[in-house]
Image (spheres, helix red, strand yellow):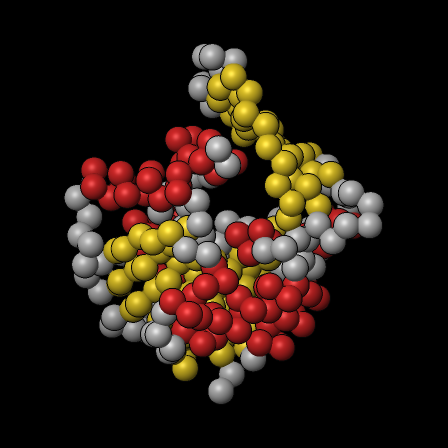
Amino acid sequence: MTFYEEIAPYYEQIFPLQKSQVEFVKSVFSNQDEVRLLEVGCGIGLLSFALADPLVKVLAFDLDEGMLKEALHAMKKLSISGNNLEFLQLNMLSIGETFNKTHFDGVLCFGNTIVHLPSKEKVLSFFIQAKEVLKPNGMLLFQLLNYDRLLDQKITTLPLIESDHFSFERYYSYPAQKATIDFNTILTIKKSKEKIEHTIPLLPLRKKDIDSLLAQAGFSYSFFGSYAKEVFTTESESLVIQARPIH
C-alpha cells in the first residue's frame, strides 16, 4: 500500500481542515455569483466538502485510490449532491488533456501537493496546464511549505502529531547531490502498536523557484506567509500563492 492509502483512515485527524484555508478561497471569489473550481490533490475531500454548494461547483481529484475511497464514502454518508461536487482519480499533469480550456474560475492545489512532482520542468508543465484550463480572469491558488526555511536551517524534525489513537512522527533528510529531499514518516497505532513507516521524495522548491516558474508560465502573482495573507518572511512556515493568468 502507498503512504496515503495507509494513512487515509487517520488523515482528517493528522491534517484537519483549516478554517483560514476555506476563508482564503472564499475571499478570492467573493465577488462572483457562480464559481467553478478544480481542486488538485484533494485527499479525502475536506476542503471540497466545505466549498461546494449550489453556486460553487467543485471538481476534485487525487491520484491516490485510498484517499478517494474515503472521500466518496464521506460524500455518500453526508448525502452531498453530485450536482455540486465530483471526485475523480487523476494525475495532476493530465489536467490540460482532461479538461476544456478556460473552463474553471479557480484551480486549487494545497497541502504541499506540488512538491510531489519530480522536477521543476514538471512543475512548469503543471502551471502551464493550469493556465490553459483557467478562465481569463481565473485564479491559481496553491500552498507549499517554506522550503527556504527548511533548507537554510537544515530542519530535520517537524512537531509530533498525536491523539489517543495514534502518533505521527515526521522527519526530513537531505541526501547529498540529489534534487529531492526525503520526507520520512512513522505512524504508530497505539492500540495495536503497529508502526507504518514511509519515505517520500519531495522537490524542495524555494520562493525564487516558484517566482521564476510562474513567470515562465505566464502568471502575475502574490506571495503570502499564511492563508490569512500575512507578509511572507524567512520564518513563515508556509508559502501561499495567488496567481492570475496574463493574457
